[in-house]
Each structure stands twice: as C-alpha cells, then as structure tokens.
Length: 245
Image (cartoon, rainbow, N blue to C red; front, side, top):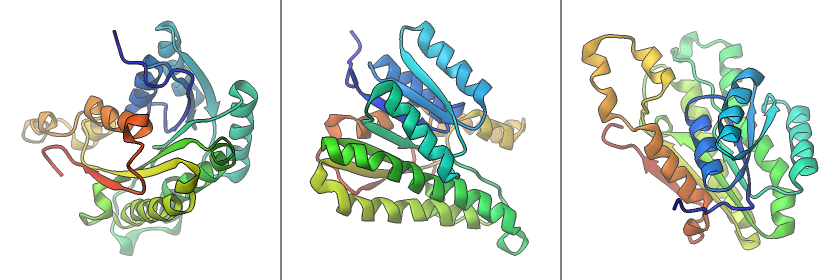
C-alpha cells in the first residue's frame, strides 16, 4: 500500500501546468494531499487536475500570474475559502531565457526576476500568516545549479535563483520558531519536455538524457522536504544534481 504522508494536507504548487510542477502535483495527490495547481495557462492546469481527479485525488485549479501581488492575494483567498488552510508551498514556477548580459533587455531581465524571485516572495508572504497561526508549515523553494555553477547567458536566471537561496536562509531564521520549515533545492539538468525541446534531436546530445536527473527522482526529494520526515532540516540549500550537474 502506498504511503500516505499528506493525508489532510493542502499543498500549493506554482508552475503546476507541466513538467516538474505537474509531476509534484500528481505525487502529492497520490499520497493524500489536496493540491492547488497554480500557473498562467488554465487549460494546462485543467489537464493536470483531470488526471488527478480521475485517479481519485483532489485538485483545485487556480490560474494566476505569481509576479502580480493582486493575483497572489486572490489565489490565497480562494484557497482559504475552499480548504480553510494551507500546509505546504512549493515555489516551483520559473522563467528562463539564455542571453548574454550585454544583450539582455530590461524586459527579459524583469520577467526572470519577477517570476523566479518576486513570485517566490509573494507566494511565500501570502501563506505565512496561516502557517504562523497554526504553527506548522513546509516551504520548498526551487533554485538551480545555475545559482552557483555559472554558465554564459544565464545572468538574469542565475541572479534570480541565487536570490531564492538568500531568501530561504533568511526566512528560515525568521520563522523556524513557529515550526515552519523553509528549505531550497539546487536542481541540476532534468529530463523534462522543455529540456528535450532545447536540446533538439541530435543523437550525440539526446543520448545524455538518461544520465540527467529524471522527473520522478526530483519529485521524491521535493516530497521528502515537504513531509514531516524532514522536520529536523531548516534553512538548508541542497544539491540535487544527479549524475550530471
């Protein structure tokens, strides 16, 4: 019988319409959680929700641009009306565009900082009052190997993901006395649809896919940090690189 670590828990996942976010949602629901699917494309969220519901799980679709304060506030209000609480937040949504800093437009810079870092801040701030009130919460922030292994063209992305780690450390010190765990994961290259699309069909490149992190491997780590099994870990930033950084 599958372990049900999240029975009765409400889990908010940003960037839940595809890739890692969708995988987390399916796995949380399979372990008893009510999952709140957040993203900008409602049709993608609905597809993920339908799969969860057909398997007997509970999923709520909440289209939102997490870089907008008003939409995050509206999202949190809807969650509280539907479920009355929140237990876990997975800050997974991300934007990325590879371009040298000298050629980076203000628009491209803003988009990556706004979604990756400001969105993480806004969603985190939104859930904290309820978590502090109930003296329980798990926040998992998704950073990237690009925050400390530096790649040309990743300036804005690297800055945003490094900022997430700084936010994680500071917030953990502020809320750990309230029994709230805040941790970050540095993710390496992962075999997702976006990765495969960027790599193209060159056999010399695609042969590396099996050596990359697999989605199911990452999901297991995320669920661990969101569970009570990780209650002793606070303010950590952990490498999840697999075989290839």
